[in-house]
Length: 289
Image 1 (cartoon, helix red, strand yellow):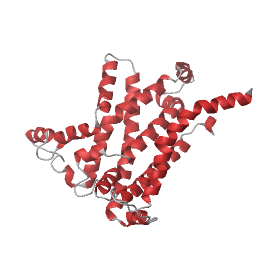
Image 2 (image 1 turned 90 degrees about the vertical axis):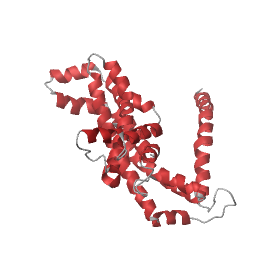
Image 3 (image 1 turned 120 degrees about the vertical axis):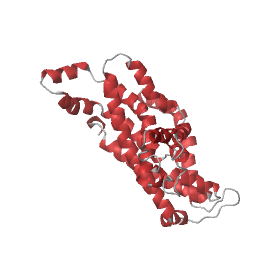
Image 4 (image 1 turned 180 degrees about the vertical axis):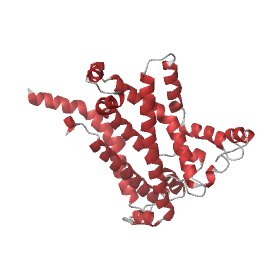
């Protein structure tokens, strides 16, 4: 009887395993094989071993793209979670118009990031943007006239736009986590004399760990593979200063260096995989051990 149940379970899991193999395992193995060639996307491919990987780490532009990608990912992941949790704690409180406020906060997340980037570019464009002219009428342009000339301010704008767009999505996951916390637990903490900050640290945060895990993982994956917001706001400029690895891969591929770009994609894959595994380990619950 038990053997029949196991066989039935294996049979029911076969379609999912088949789809996983077709859409993940096969492309991954194909990509690994392609990364070891000098294929230009048109002609025949010649095996070059690890030469593509060696060229990548010898390219100053590529290593600069790693720095940009990591800085963007770190800033976005941190501020997305802080903003999303802050929004969730605020939206959990009862007040008039709460549903409309939730919709307004979440609305940017359903807009294409490429379109959102262009909207912000028209607002922030140095010398011609709407916000630049508005600030000029007030007698000061702050940093709006030169934000693209300095790497720190450019990265700050990119992170700000990304956080502004996707904080609502992070908020929704945190709201779901807050809703699953039993009111009895919070009431017991109040009876025990715990203050607001103590309840947040000792009760809310530990019980929000599943939501934190989901948000951290999804934010790391999305931020490390960033393409649209950088392409629409700066196109990787000035020069290649704000170019991400995703943009670098696209440009190498269109530059008839398909084998090399696939090798870079493999590097990006492991750049995403390693912090995701680390975050899953650090946020795992005791019952998962």
